[in-house]
Image 1 (tube, helix red, strand yellow):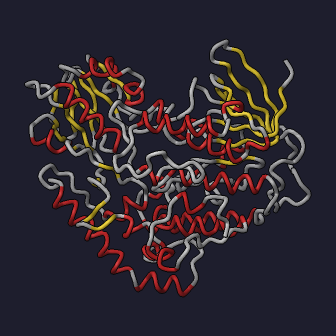
Image 2 (cartoon, rainbow, N blue to C red):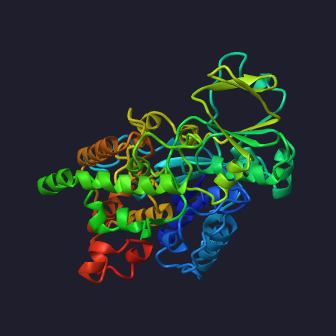
Image 3 (cartoon, rainbow, N blue to C red):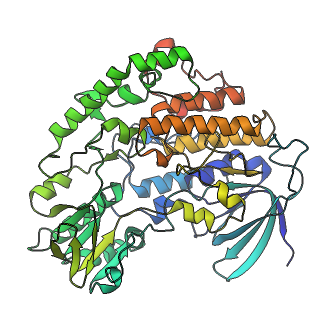
Length: 516
């Protein structure tokens, strides 16, 4: 069977994939989605209780606002899926999507030098195929080849491939008499099935990030305080959680999401004067972090349960690890339905889990909410030598403007850069990418892009010990400014200087119809 020719292939139909498809729709891209629906992690990595971590108005496309955007309740994952499906229907994007189409391999078929100057990245659409993509039809179990000029990777860092801890020989899940599963497997269960897995069982949940916290609450509610059936959370690393987006009566955006507040934080390529200002304002940055910490330790019994992190709040915010704590989590803990067990190491024995302090606990079910291996998702399909360019020794993926790897030709990555509003981050970079594809501006020389990436990574390493997550939350407005300037837009998006300085930035500020 001869290959199918296309200009642009998009891998994945989650939030980033549909954003990229909408912006590149005039090129009629083909979108490969391995499942039978859109939504990505919102469809395949959500529990019955999963909700968005921010307000609706902070999680919407610039040209497609929520119908009830002023509703202060956090939308459920089902509401988000309906919103995404409405977006796809409204912009007629389904015509581009090939469902049940899993990309299993990508092969470079372009020339070693795609243009005359190796220092230049070259056009994204060179006029001839550059990549060959092997796509498995999961229904017929057949493979079709596609040859494309450009690939946009939107597989994301979460879902699909579970991250599972390694255990010493003879101390892994194989010795445990009970049931072991990853949170990804739990997400695939229907509500009734999920309830049966944990109801009446002694359950251990491994982890202390959002998915683990939500899962512990679900387990506690399923058992309704049944004697001896509390849910045990095995916690290694601690991170700050917040109850809502208010701190001592002040809106949270005042501290991090305005242009004036982001002057407190270091950013890439800042001038000497701004660097000096950032140095002088460091005590205020420390004060803001302590101010928020004081509220959280007052609001939550963190010390009582040994859940107060040793690191400053700002480090979690700078690495996009701040999570909303369900309002009933500590109530369930106070009632004995959730037990917190701190342990830096643990392993299995026949009856349950043994901890590094020598203690043992009996369990019927162990659910590992230990995250996902996003890097493996990419390396499984990437050819050499490009596979070696996917990650720096620092652990971060090297991406210019969070989108282009200077060492990988005719390819873009959307959804691998994190912020406090990932949908907006993906959409703005998709707009930038579409204008780049249409040659409305040119990329800098390769060496300059590499230097820019290094500067950004150095800033992140100085900002937080969790820098590998590649999060731009503390300088997201500056990051958007740079993107706007390259696209020829005015980076200052507000109508008045007061709003520019003190109001929060969001996706509506970057509507393409308002280019100033």
